[in-house]
Length: 545
Image: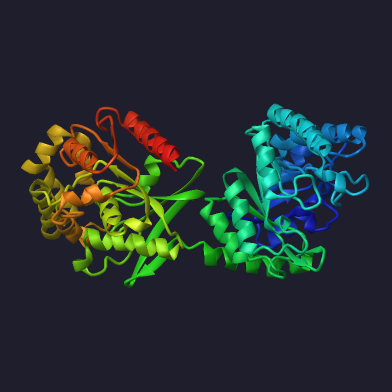
């Protein structure tokens, strides 16, 4: 996430001075308003020369334009004024390419003829909703023409006054051009007795996947809503920032409704809140574990294989809307440091580390899965912590109910060569060895993966992992597999000696009602393999959860 500000907070005589003020406060992102360029907020006409000048001024200062204001009263009782608002919106949209804005922000309007930010009882009427949809359809046509997005936010005084109504609008319009601006303070109504965290969570459940911009202002409920600088009111900022992170939101967070005198204090406050809630690390056993997440909704932990990192699952799978993809670097892998006690390098401990991460993130139940070693971790977790599991995904399993001598021999050879010869010389000798040549003949992609272990920057440090994990197993009695009652997907492919196809078949046969899908081997068609992983897991998640 990046921190920005409404440009018009800085009242200056020229555009250059306004943008210089933004830079002076250590910000690199703005929500623009044409008032900053000497025009009305909704200009009657925007010359190409002025649009180009604004774009150059932003570029010169290395500023990004998150959005430009295009607000007008979309259900103004005066139809002529509505039509003029749409015409002026078209002027703004036509300038977006030159000024560098991907998004135009709108309000959904009010029946109040004098003030578009004042509530009117008729906002709740079917006629108001119908006329808002009519105006919005015209606005979407404009957005299509000029290749921009439209951002709307729930506003207490407007026809879309809640997250539920915003969801209804998105569902009825069905336009990819229509997106959500999340302003947490606008979700609260005077006298609302519900828990603030619950109101925010509900809004993110409904709107999280459609968010493109977040606003940062505070509020105080004194019988009417009073809006304040961030940190000076009642908004639960920690929860708001956590929700933004968990949604996978990485866009701009834009401050507004504050005097210029409060900008520096607000910047400090918000950066600290982002830092507090933005950590992708958690501590356990003196080890700093690295984790990653993307998307919003039902949590799906998808773990990497031996010698891998979170980059593997995140490179293979894009979570569908409504799912939160998560993974962590296991002990001795990726960005998790230090390696910790060697006697804890085993499947039981790795599964317990996942349990600790779920507790850290306050996740009660999740879909768990993984690739190769990650599949073993997920299987161990499902057997030992079954009450925390909603579903199970086992991709290219490399273990059944005991260690594998063939894998033990290969990996112990690799560890010995790294320890005795160093990674570079060890790789040279390993490539000349009989175990490597055998794998290379049978499955070149598997051989490449084995060789990659020598190239890990931490190869010397993590060599013991190559010895310890192959001699372990996720469990030691396959009868236990029959106790798994959650929806399960098993994926396997042929021509892969490290991940035998028969292992996938065996697991799918023993786990009750498990679905089995065959993947194209990576060395035959890597692109097709990846597309099948995406399709099979995506279909599984959407069908069962």
